[in-house]
Image (cartoon, rainbow, N blue to C red):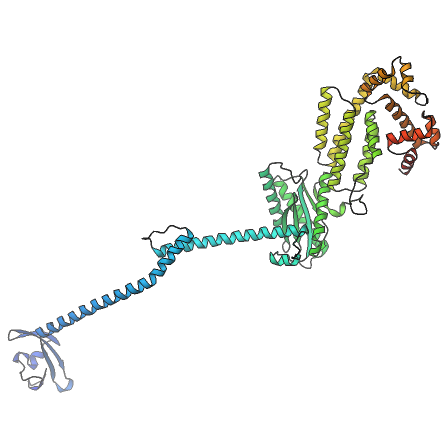
Length: 552
């Protein structure tokens, strides 16, 4: 290290060696701050700096060999430090990797075994975790959708049991509503029963798949047409679909009902465009409180059943169906007494179609015009009428194959009837055929016609009996009876008694004569015999018959 002034004088030096002449002040001024020079065969690096206002120069001479030596030593140190850092870093990396990777590896193995997903040892664990997470997310969404669907099914099952009044003993209706999260806006309700005309719980027409599709259309259409603010559920119950609607709070009864009826009409119109026709919608009355829902469902159900029986379609109201003829215990019955059945039987057997139609008119008027009966009771009435026709056909003693086949077809047609108007049409047709048959049989057989004419002429004679008639026609009594029964379908003595009872019934209804006098005028020897025979064929005594006809 040297300090030189501008006169080339050595102000200070770090060694006893002098500064070479080639490095004088003037020469240094012409060189850059750092440069190389060769002195005495050795290379040096010269670094100079000015001392400011003193005019001095600070000159440092460093042998290149020394610089190279220090550089190599520094390089060696750097290499050692780098290798040491890499080694230590690798050791720490291996340690911490094993410490953290092994649990991750175990986790991936557990997830692979539990989820059933394939996992290769060489596969990227993070890729597997990503795939597994995505799969779990999709599975969770599917599970949530399934749970939502199951909750909806449970909710509908609860509502079904609520309407049927079949809730568990340890659950109240309001607890169930909260438990199943039923979104009723209020406790004001209306219940509607929806079904197809002619359908029943066991009906499979028009095919199971189509029927299920129509049920889905009905459910979706009704729920979609529910007014905003109201809440509607369509439930499958007892072969019908029941539409339960809860109205918005503070909705007046008249407005709520009108709104529900309008929604039902819109639904019927929409379903008709889809091909779902002949629908019945039977509505209950307006209900306040969940306690009244079972009775509302029963009202709607019975109204729908009655509409099926009476062949009605469209929107019907429970208030328009006045059920009657129930005993003090609330059990319904129909009007078809034994005497009326006997009157119908005698009219058909005698070929009197007008009288048979008159009896039927009275039966249908009492049962279905004066009041209404539930569907089950109406079906019992229909079966009873059918059984009467079956018994009459059996007693007519049909002989030809065609007559037997026609009678079997008639019974099948009656049993297949699904409504009261339909069975009335079939009954009219069957009765017309049966009365035509009896008249034809009587007309075709002049012998029987002559006997009938003779009976009509001599019925007032108390001595008129089978031997008397056989003597008139020159036949034996047994042969006469057999021929007459084959031709007419009933025994000769029965025909005589029926004709006398017919004349007596006419007299009872049109005159005020005593029963004794009427009995004598109709060929009965005494009043007791007349009463016994009259009750056998009419089902009531002459006095009661006169009272009944007087009331009518």
